[in-house]
Length: 269
Length: 216
Image (cartoon, rainbow over all chains, first blue to last red; front, top):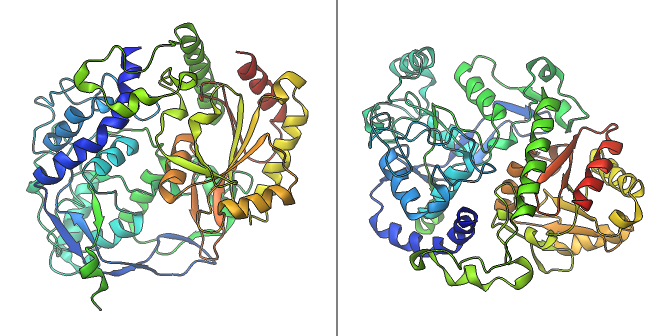
């Protein structure tokens, strides 16, 4: 009873917490200039390119210390009380306790074992939002020295080396990743990240069925096809997103927040 | 695999439902909380919805919808009734009309006592075109009576509900939506007790789940 009550009460206690954080939030954000996202999978009716407006993206993924501030202010999201609807039973599993990240979750390392609902709640609390797939992919296309990383040798080498490495038991500091062209760190090489519209990936989760998506399960999905079969990393992200339920958590899945560009910046031609 | 998961979900939800029934408290929601955690809005609840929702209740979500009469419609308003819920969009030419027809067929299979109490809820993906007025028109077109609840929400609300239901969807360039075809049955507490995936069969099972949900 008291736990459930707590959950209900949390919602209404939120607004004051947001105000408190807004002033204290130290996480720097980086402007990502407007660009074009080329979807990995699209239907024959879709445009090959999706324009993306300029936006702000957290320079670093959200860390354990930052997430601790969030669960401290929002009891609903503590490990022992969170609703199974919003986070699975492995939520914050690497933490030592409800309010104690402990040795397996260093303060400056990216927080993992968080659900989409939790990531979204954090973003809302911080006065931000999760990036969309198009925004995230646009930002993540940048190499170390140029906005398009495909021909950036050092960048692609590091990316594929990371994909081949198992997840370490204890993640390194979020700021240990080399900054990319936009000054954003760790989009590759640290953890996978939630996007707001992860549930747009229309695959069934049953790999054998996905070669010709079942028209009975997905309306209109028969027309979905891949654009660039050589972009292996993008396929891995697509596969991950499509395999997730919104309450799932994994040992290598974290998130960072985004925000619309300031109106002044956005309206500048 | 999928069936397996649904079975587990159903079992869990039913179990949760029993728990909820066993200790359904009538007291105001903030009564036994430390003063520091109280928030005035929390204690504002009317007597009918004073009891907190269960841990598995979809009605915990704080996203809000608008019905086709233009009234604000928090999902918790469905509390107390067995619910059949489907996400759709009004201009859909393929699966959605079939889903609505299936919901009608499902309703026809119900015993009178359940049929009269059950809510048939359609929530639109199409936040731009399916305005409350457009949904009101759809209600007339499809001759849906007052047991049907047609809901419009903003992007945020639709995405969160879809995530809660396990519905995947995306807007296509031509303005239509690709989406999972899913009919969900909720019990009186707003917990998922059954889901029918796809477009074929499964109506008897869904009706049975609805009867159990309605008599809980």
